[in-house]
Image (tube, rainbow, N blue to C red; front, side, top):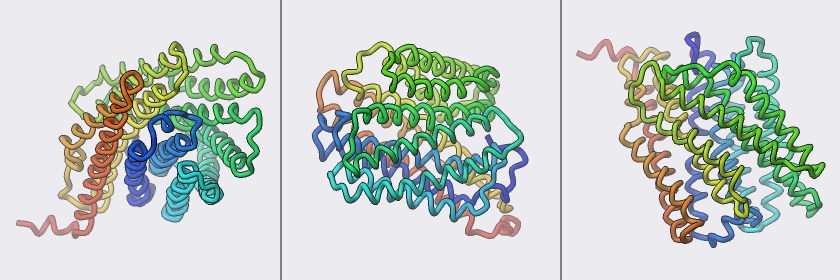
Amino acid sequence: MFNQGLSLDQAPPISVPFRFFITAPLFGIALGLLFFFFPTDLLINRYSSVAIGGIHLFTLGILSMIIFGAMQQMMPVLAGAIIKKPVLFANVVHTSLTLGTLFFSASFIFEIKALLHVGASLLAIAFLTFFAVLAYLIFKVKFLTSTVNAMKLFTLAGIITSVLGLYLAYSHISNDIGSLHYNFVYLHILFGLFGFATILIMGVSFQVIPMFYVALDFPKFIQNKIPLFVLTVLIVFGMFLFLQLDTYVLKVLFSVFFVLFCVHGLNSLNKRRRPVFDVTLWYWKLSLTFLLLSMLNWLFVPQDSYFLLAIMFGLGFLYSLLQGMIYKIIPFLAWFHLNSKGHMIIPTMREMINEDMIKLHFFIYTASVFFFMISPFLSNFFVIIAALLFIISNILFLMNCVMAANKYAQIAKTNPLDAFTQG
């Protein structure tokens, strides 16, 4: 993920990605709390205003927050695309995304339309700023890799997702909910989850898995074609929706693409050239397994309720993987910045965050996903257990991230030359 030529001049200040990563679990805590203050039936009904607010706490406050933070670190590293004023850029995007998510979600949860005006405006600033800069930089990159190409597709999918989202927000503000409204909603969801999130995850994994885990490369066909196929089918899916054609064959295509990605990803992880234990592997394997299961669910299980599918894809696949990535990125960045500043006495990357704490987080988080999944078949009581575990897991996630940030801050305050004066 991080090339050998990376220098401190290329990388943004460590505070840039850290602020995004540390903010995400706070929204996770807020999402979990909803289950204690609102009836479960409202939260699992995707058409209810409370559910819409809760969904956007996840998609904006967690998913977009982590992706925006990670991209600001990965753009100069993986693509050589350097943001000239990274702190100003991060301040604008992070502030508007954080406040925009709070106002936007609150407008639906508490049914206060005035908040929707503010929230939608702030989110427009966040997304348009982010994608305007990203598009300007990423489409100028000349050295093209499968990851850079995936980033370009991610940019296109992100712009489409943003435009659809702003259109839907305007529809609610103006009370202009037309007959095609739910077609736009469905397309917004698909572009957001399959395009904005999954295409980027694919592109990053093509480098992260082989380099971080000394694992096998993905086949060239998977790297070069699958992300492009996903975006193409997304566009065709939109045409099918508005022409009122049966989309099942397109769902099969999506599933085939994602299954191929999962099978090769798991194969790469299982046949590592250096099979050293790494707790973050658990997150990757759990995530890819849930992507497989969610695709099978989407194809073969009647979708009277999308709650189970949402849990499997959103929490089981997306959030699991992003947590595993952050547990790799934060320790590396802390070590890299300290090493680049000349510090000699530095904890190893595996010492930046206590592995036992990461394991504890993993087990509690996995348990929360499990209880969410069984709750539709048993009792709403299990939803409350799941929500409590989800809150605890996000608190642990926050603590672990802050732990690494504090270790970095404490060492960064010291004089690197002190290492030569210690007897």
